[in-house]
Amino acid sequence: MNKNFYMIEKEPYYLNTKNEVSMFKAAYAGRLPVMLKGPTGCGKTRFVEYMAHSLNCPLITIACHEDLFASDLIGRFLLKNDETVWCDGPLTKAVRMGAICYLDEVVEARKDTTVVIHPLTDNRRILHVDKNGETLNAHKNFLVVISYNPGYQSVIKDLKQSTRQRFIAINFNYPPFSKEVEIVAKKGRLRLK
Ligand SMILES: Nc1ncnc2c1ncn2[C@@H]1O[C@H](COP(=O)(O)OP(=O)(O)OP(=O)(O)O)[C@@H](O)[C@H]1O
Ligand SMILES: [Mg+2]
Image (cartoon, rainbow, N blue to C red; front, side, top):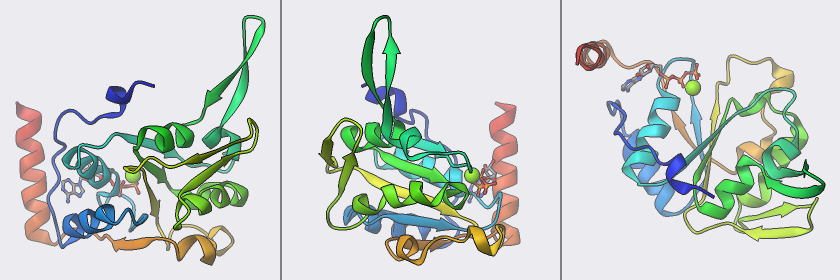
């Protein structure tokens, strides 16, 4: 398992717009799962990369979609030469190595998939790997972070209440005009370098 591969080496540029950085740090200190709520393009992905870098924690991102099965997160047996070998999925890797596991657009995932994260997001902090009979205790640095855009998806695709109530919500919105100017100017300068 190559932890370095998941480290964010260079500090991503992120401008704190309210109190999101201190909220995330407090949640991480208590290993409380975090939900980033807000419209597209408001900086959720950039923020989680910035936080992973500043906490010196590996980051594993999973882009959720409607064909995402629990086995895509947990892992599966694969044929290698004439052997069957177990291959950890991204969630299992994060649980073992102590990464921040970022489930982007979590409502897009199938309902059975989101239930997989339930025992990881309460006081149990365990993952059942039913296919190989393992139950893993999450590494002490492991944390689940999800992104959620409430107005964007249809009602049918809303998050289950039992999933939602497990997370500390951090609300995002587009930055105020003056901060947006600062971000655009800074990004322009970074591009010129
Ligand atoms: N506070 C901020 N500081 C620095 N850059 C920002 C900030 N907010 C937004 N951006 C910039 O806006 C762009 C879009 O941000 P990002 O991709 O993180 O949005 P998102 O909320 O993840 O969107 P989506 O829901 O579509 O995935 C990025 O290129 C990022 O640089
Ligand atoms: Mg994003």
